[in-house]
Length: 268
Image (cartoon, rainbow, N blue to C red; front, side, top):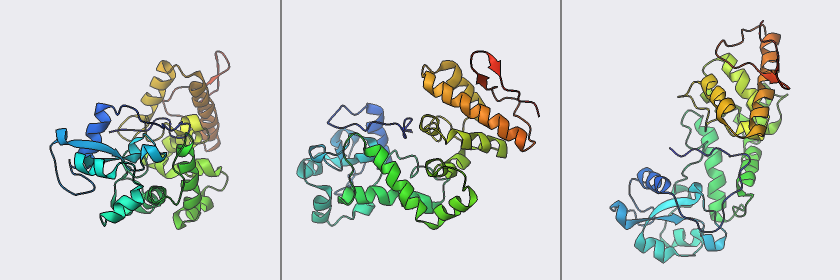
């Protein structure tokens, strides 16, 4: 499954590029090899990947803007605005799929949160929200946070975690679907405080992978020194929080590094 690994730091792709075969096949599979416009099924070789918001109108070359289309419908749609083309076929924008979004794809999240996210894409596809340009992903995240804080579930998060910044608090529900324990959750909350590490949640750090093994692998294999520094900073804050709560530091968790060689004591 496609996972967006730079969600909070991403520069959205604009212009027409080559869609990797793996992503093309994932879109076809998710859509059951069915054209999302005429509703007919086709062999894979007769299908295309359509940019729902046309590239010619500033649409992104991202999986969230992809849908399966037969050649006839794709050619017929061309650069027609999605809202107009859907109306000509009596198709509701809301019925069109969103592929590859980490919130909509996360079935462990409350449906209310996933619907909030889906409505953002629906508004973008209707032309009610801007969804173009290299900053499109960042605008999507900002609009999602705004909608979340206006919802009941967002209010509950605000009351529960008032000391967390809003951008960190917004991803806590996702962090909870990844964590296997209260202690794991404490560390994931520390990761939410930086855009670099926040992007790991749900992409590299998932419920089907051991959290601490994944963290150690990133620290040992990543060439991104800024990311590794942010992880170490999160580990330092985590160690302090574990001590404050009189909890046990996980035996399989890496020790945080401070400077060049010294370590924070993790014993409690």
